[in-house]
Structure formats: structure tokens, C-alpha cells
Length: 234
View 1 (cartoon, rainbow, N blue to C red):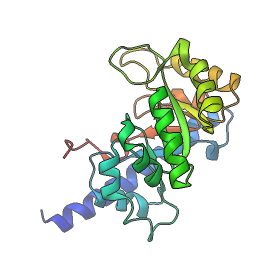
View 2 (cartoon, rainbow, N blue to C red):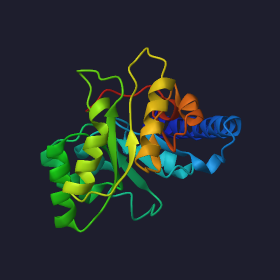
View 3 (cartoon, rainbow, N blue to C red):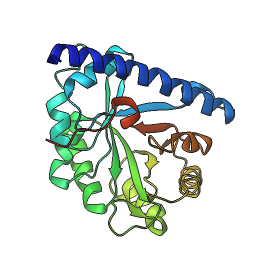
């Protein structure tokens, strides 16, 4: 199969996958008595080539998630002139030395999780004159190997971001532990958001986004169900 034929085949698969996902999101919203447009699908394009992103854009997908600043920088700036509706959300762990690049590049940063990063982002916002949407990542399972603010420290960290660093935090993100029932984790995040008047809840992935919608997710991050099996990182 030629590369052109393969790209065309992949484009059809991505288009069909997106159509199925939109239907599932609409059904989940209906079961939760929510409007379908109350949930934003974030297509997680990490490790997928720019051709896959273009195929999703052609199928009407506008919001994408990337883990690494370097990979996002290689894909998205060149696409923006042709697709002004494109929105990029950085969802992976962010190094402090990449904060300024992230502020310059992204429309949202979902992985704010420690004081040093809060300080670096505040400095980058001042220098760049640009304010991407900011979400605090909460480690709802308190897993030692996983990024995110521990559950018990989330409230204090939110206050630090707002009061000490002047960051306009707009929401919360979580990744429940693999194998756990995700619903208690989603419920905890939703309650925390209500307590701190945060309108954005990024939770739910390919295997559990319908449960996340039932618990109040405003953004669901879906990768393999859009693009298929993820290629290895470059």
C-alpha cells in the first residue's frame, strides 16, 4: 500500500471513529440529562503524525491534546493559519524549563501540579502577555509514581496558585489509577471543583469517558478511540 493510500485509509478511519465517539458522547449526555455541547472532546494526538491531526481537523475535530511541548511545537503552529478553530491542550507532565514555551504554544495547560511550576507559569504569563487556560492536575489515587497534587493538598495548592502567583486557574484534571472504579475519583474531582468555583473538569479517557460525563466532565481526553493504536514515541 502506498503512503498516499494509507493516509487516505487512515483519514476515513479517523472520520468514522470521530462520528462514533460523538454519538457515544451525545448518548452519555442524554443519560445524564446534559446538553451534548456541554462536553468537549479532546483528541489526544500524542505520537501520531501531523497527517492524522489533519485528518481529524478535516472531519471537524478542533481540540487536541499533546503530552510533550516539543512534539506539539513540531505539529501545531504550522496548522493554525489554515485551521483558526484549532485549540491545543497540553495534558502531560510539564517541566519548569518548558513553561514559557508551553504558554507561548498552548491554549490550555492541564498539568499544573507543584509550586515551582506555578511560579514558572506565572513568570511566563507575564513575559509572554498570554494567558492559556490553566487546570490543576490532582492525583486522586495518591499514587507515588504519578504526577498531580495529592488529594489532601489540592485546596491549599489552588489557593497558592491564585493568591500568591495570581494564576487564573479555571479547572481540574485527573487520571484515576488503572484498575480502579473511576467513578469515586471523578466524584471527588467534581466536588472539589464545586468547592472552589471551577467550571472546567477534564476527566475520562477512551475506556471511561462515559462514566466521567455522568460525573460532570466538561472535557474528555480520547486518543486510541480516535486515532487507533498509538505509534511508539519518536
